[in-house]
Amino acid sequence: MAIEDNPISRVRYGEELRRRREAAGLTQEELGQRVAMSRTHIAHIEAGRRRPDVEDARRLDKVLNTGGFFERFLPVLDGRKVAEHFAEALEFEGQAMEIREYAPKLVPGILQTPAYAREVLSSGASPKTAEERDELLATRLERARILDNFHSPKVWMLLDEAVLRRKIGGAQVMCEQLRHIAGLGESHRIRVHVLPFSVGYHALLEGFVSLMWFEDVPPIAYAEGLKSGRILELPSVVRECQVAYDHALGDALSHRKSLALIRSVAEDYEHEAQRADLP
Image (cartoon, rainbow, N blue to C red; front, side, top):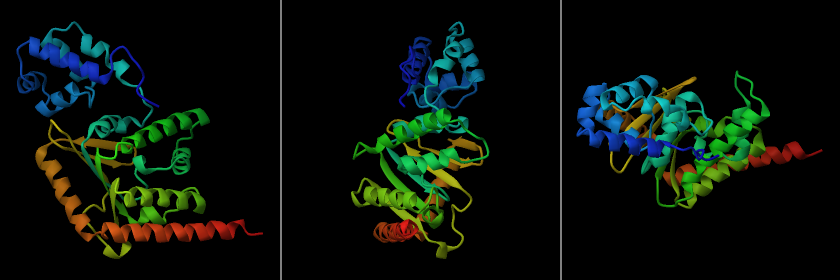
């Protein structure tokens, strides 16, 4: 499901902010100081990567004397069905030049097959109607299209071995899912590393993190927990996340050995599925 064809999309919203800021003779830094936002935050809004919250929009309207324009058009920026805490990260993901993720328990969204994603979205403490599930599924599958371009973004996936071993949807679903990941790795579209159980404690054990780099603005990190997620922009914090990722990567299997393990586990699931089909 793509972003709706609204009169003003995030990109056009950002372009309008840039136009009005420049008309006021302000730099991104100067505007940020007046509205209590960082220069990086302003840059990401202007690039269409994130939306301001209501209070941010009100301050923008006040400082730029725009008569409520930026607050009034906030609702038209939302076109895809995702968890609220992930909405900003989704915009960043679609425009990143490089993405490096660590997944502790589940296959990352952009790698999920339809069957695996459907099972994940059908589970959880909050029941969903078939229509709600299918809307979420469409968005998740649309996310995977960023891999259609072979060259951008560059994608590194660091997977805990638990991602391979946790049976989501049954043996056949897992077999197809792991072979999909292996295929992407063997075609060199993504780079995959597995952190085996034998490593024990490692630098990213606490939870999911996604690191993203862009062409024209500083990198960010996105960290996620239960029903929550945070965009991290402070350079020192982002750098700490990058260092932790590098440390964990140093403990992981090589790309080649990781693909071999993924293929081996997929074969185990295939055999399990075949045994289940026997009379």
